[in-house]
Length: 112
Image 1 (cartoon, rainbow, N blue to C red):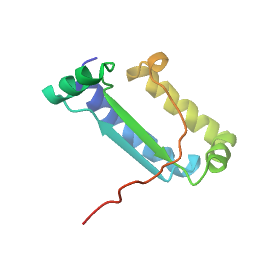
Image 2: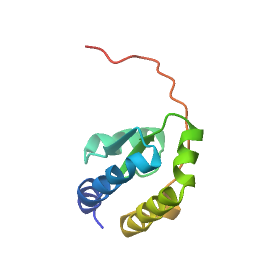
Image 3: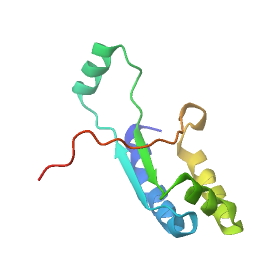
Image 4: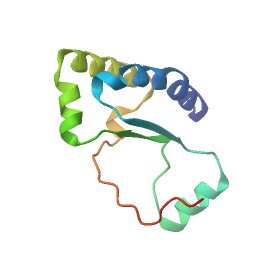
């Protein structure tokens, strides 16, 4: 699947599916960061010896890890998680797509 096809499916098909399960799973925020095709990407990658860029990055926000676990522990939450995973298998290379939990540490705040 091309980057354009991936991003279209992700935005037009998967995003509404995530949104439809947000309440059940306790998701407070869902952001898709789509990689842009630009020669600057290659130049930056080459200057650092970095790997090929991803097609994008998803950010999912919960109030806490406990809130995320609670949302996924109900029967409805497990069914929602399974439906999302089945859809992800259609367009994501899961074996090469790392998942991790993180704490945000703001260094420079948004400016007006």
